Amino acid sequence: LAHYPVVNKRGEIIASAVTNLDIHDMARAVRTYSAKALYIVTPLEDQQQLVKSLIGHWTTGYGADYNPKRCQALETVRIRNNLQQASIDIAQETGSDPQTVVTSARSHLNSISLARFQEILGTGFPCLLVFGTAWGLSPDCIAAADYILKPISGNTDYNHLSVRSAASIILDRLYGRSGEP
Amino acid sequence: LAHYPVVNKRGEIIASAVTNLDIHDMARAVRTYSAKALYIVTPLEDQQQLVKSLIGHWTTGYGADYNPKRCQALETVRIRNNLQQASIDIAQETGSDPQTVVTSARSHLNSISLARFQEILGTGFPCLLVFGTAWGLSPDCIAAADYILKPISGNTDYNHLSVRSAASIILDRLYGRSGEP
Image 1 (tube, rainbow over the protein chains, first blue to last red):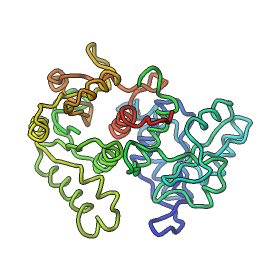
Image 2 (cartoon, one colour; image 1 turned 30 degrees about the vertical axis):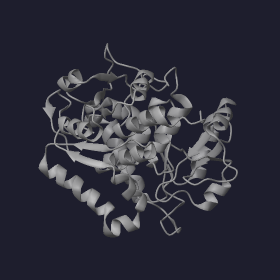
Image 3 (cartoon, rainbow over the protein chains, first blue to last red; image 1 turned 120 degrees about the horizontal axis):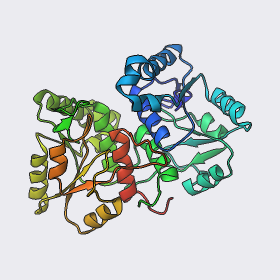
């Protein structure tokens, strides 16, 4: 989940503030669908500290005892300064540079379907799936990615899901269809 | 989305506090998948006022101009004192008492699959799909429902998604599979 480089309503590149519920919801989805880790990407030190305190609260001592399910989810979180650091981390752990797959609420000419993404995941190479906060990832960040994922559509022309919903739905479409329609 | 009757960690029946992001996320999902309305159910007057101010802010004046997509989503929200009022509302609007379908993170012997729920929706009769906040709907509320929906499972034994994620995924499984895996 990238808080930088993202754009604001006017298209200016900003570093957005962290939203606690993004971390809880996405960590639980990551844990439910066995993704390997949730990277919270922000270069802002005070925001990194906020995320650290949140994780610390729920993964140690009283918080971990009080709600062990929250602990199990938040254990998947890693805080990094930028997307490059997340990629390096994955490369060191797996021995392969990850493919970066970015999401966008807008359509792009060369975007790929979830079916194609599933094929790419099927090759066994690691992937870094990137969601932007605020008004979405910066154009440069999108252009630099290996793949752009097609936006999720429902059955209307409205496609403005929250990042929490979008991430959950994408993981469910990829990994959650064991026999259930 | 029911804030009453729900249970706390100790199983006691409580009225929970409203979480703003629940309303935003669920209203956006409702709008994306063309559900008819999002009922926010709470008997607490101060909580109803909070929801009214939130909706007022984004559906009128500056807020509506600033982010019209938020306005379109929040226009689907209706505040009611209890689930019965929501049912009466639906009956008056459609001419039929709705079937109530409750969700639960636990398995119940007589729970139905999403495929069965889809068949029920296919009959054209209205349905009220109920999500509980806090530690879930009260046992009496679950027992009184027409149907209990099976919990969502991913591909692990961890099924502790947020209510925001669960609602989004269920709507997507029901209405969002137009050609996309």
